[in-house]
Length: 338
Image 1: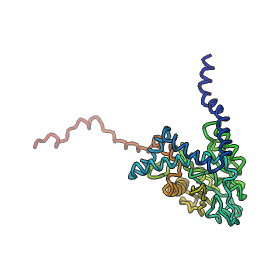
Image 2 (image 1 turned 90 degrees about the vertical axis):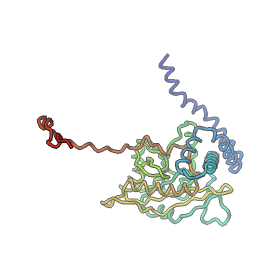
Image 3 (image 1 turned 180 degrees about the vertical axis):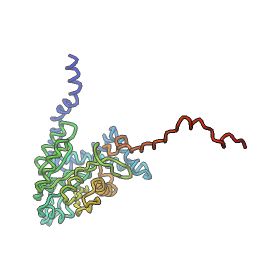
Image 4 (image 1 turned 180 degrees about the horizontal axis):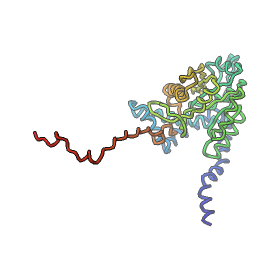
């Protein structure tokens, strides 16, 4: 009986998550009925109201104070509310991901999405080489993978499944309808990711989340841990690395920016320096966040100083042994009085 009670206690969060599946599906159905404009406006208003009441809001404000110590508190609050607004819109947009990206380089009329750096995209698609793409949780961060699938780029998106089973199932279903390959960022999946690059494919990853076994980089003035996967693959396969971001524009529109290939720092032997490469990618992300701080996900614990590697303390030098007979000798100068 005690074992059963313990099992139920441990399973309760997961069971509660599965119980939320019909609720989340009902919300998705409501969002589809409302349409993109009204549903995203509703999601934004909902999280602008509820977000500041959640514990994650304290995390967001603490992050903002540390990142922008000279910024007025009222401005930090404004950015935090804008971040909740963006998150609410992004959540509602999951119901419309199959129609949200409408970019067409041949179109002459107004479109919901635009792309800059499209020449880099074509080069990635047509050069016959593997490639790596990094991004961040900015605006609607799902759009780059949809863009890749729509224009025939052989790409696999690395994603971290949500903790809530209901949200994870919904997100997985939506992604499989609108994107190319998918790889969950589990410990065993690294071999599948390596195989993607080995066979000439392209791998995309969000690099702005905490990774316990990562390398130390500086982000917004503070050290944190970054997943070194892309840098390690770049070193091993010597393939190009691009960055892509999404910018939320007025009237429900978006812009995707694809960077040229980064000139990554290299070690003395000519191979890509892993720590330096991750710092270079992180610096690009920092520039994006500083440009549009209200569109970044400030609510997650990106900085965890207690998990940074401890500095190594050099051992104290060995003291020469002193013979007992010498230790008892008092120097003549010590017995003199002034």
